[in-house]
Length: 259
Ligand code: ADP
Ligand code: MG
Image (cartoon, rainbow, N blue to C red):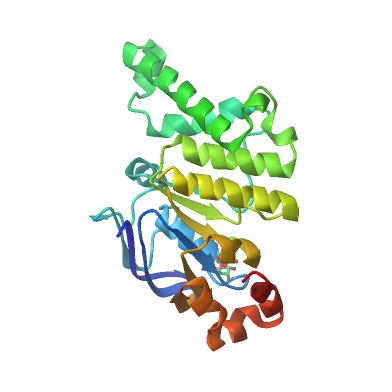
């Protein structure tokens, strides 16, 4: 098992944003996390990637306990995430946005950078190559010199994906990668995620677009009010009365249409 989540909880004041959540993420698969707004999906990602320290519970990655690690540490372990809303550096080029992400994982430090040591120059060259590969992968290398924040939403979402890929993750956490894009663009993202998986990267996906979930997911974890109310294959989830009541409700037709 690549990732093991056990009894993970996060309290904000009196609110259980995530409560006693357990699940496994098998290597090489797509695990989708779904649930209504406020269910705790983004908080769960923040716990896995070290942006929040859990109130209780454990996270094991590649057999190693990573509970409470900081984001720069989880990146080194091989976990990368994208955010629900893109937050690229204002005024920076597409390429510089991606290169900044690579630096997180490089071994040279501030002293190396100031002294321009061979190690630093080697790291810079490596970062550039990794960044270009990531931009090519998501299909925006021709935009590398553009100012990232001036580009369309769909392009910015692709750049965010490139930033995550440039850190060479073994686990990629995608928080609503297709939000705010057209149906056609959503399909494009679906294709891209398939390519990511084919490249050997395990994916956890939060997304509201049920067609995308049903097409991509091997396993679905359903959250409601911070708790796991169901786990199973797309077929099992679609037919789970608890899920239909809590989440699919009016959208059940949409989910059905995807089958
Ligand atoms: P989802 O991504 O499923 O829509 P979130 O994980 O963003 O849900 O939020 C789960 C709950 O936790 C919500 O009630 C939200 O208001 C609350 N929450 C999220 N982050 C914080 C925070 N930093 N401080 C306080 N409450 C938060
Ligand atoms: Mg969210």
